[in-house]
Picture 1 (cartoon, rainbow, N blue to C red):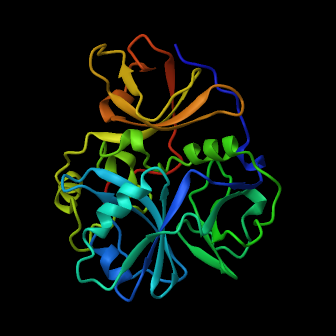
Picture 2 (cartoon, rainbow, N blue to C red; picture 1 turned 60 degrees about the horizontal axis):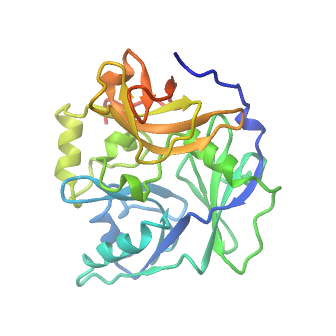
Length: 311
C-alpha cells in the first residue's frame, strides 16, 4: 500500500526566505584554501572566486560530521555554510587541525545573513550551473541544485544589508524544495551516520577523488572503488510526519531497519517528503515503512539527478 501524492508544480514557487537554521564558519588567512583542502572532501586549492563547493568534513572512519557549501569572498577568505546546530562542535574540531597554517577560523553566523532564493528571485546574472557564485556588492550568491525545475540559490551578505529582492517565501516551502533537490544537509540527528556516498555526494559534486588526503579519505575512496557501497540516498513520500534520524523498514525484515531519514519536510499538496539513506536492495522491490515494519507506507520517488558510477 502506498500513499497518494498530489502533483505540485515546484516551478511556480518564487521568493526569498531567511534561513535561520544555517550558520557560517569564516576562514581567513593566506593558507585558508590550503588548510580546507586538507580537511574536506572537495578541492579547495583550486577554488576560484566564481565557484562554490559542496563538501563534507569526515571522521577518521569516513563518517560525515558536517556538510558545507563553501565559497571565497576574497583570495584570503572562505565562508562555509552549514547546519547552525553542528557549527560550534565542527568549528572546534576543524580548529584543532590548524597548527602552523596561516588560517583563522571563526563563527560568522551573527555577522552574516543567509537567505534562500527560489524561482524568479534567483538573479539572472548567476551562472546556470550548480555550485557557481556571483557577487552582488557585498552579497555572495551561490547556485544550488534545482528542485523539480525550480531554480534555487543561497544569498549570503552582512546582516546590515537589505534583504534580497523578491516576495516572501515560507520557510516550510523552502525546506520542501531543499528535500526535493535530494542534496542533503547534515544535521545533528544523523551526525557520523554516513560516508559521503550514502548521501550521493559523489554524484552532486561533493567529493573529489583526485585530490590529496583528508580525514577519512581512505574509507571514502575504498567505498567508491572497491564496490563496497550498499547504501544510497533516495526520495520518498509518506502520509505522516518524518524526522531526521527516524528509521525506515522494509517489508522483508521487521527487525532490522533498512534506512534512515536524513531530511524531511511537509509536501505542499499533503503528506511529507524525505531524503532517506538506505540499502540499495531495499529500493529494488517490496514496500518501505516509516518507524517500524507496520508503520506508514512510503512511496519511492525518482531522484532528480543521475547516480554516477564512473568518477
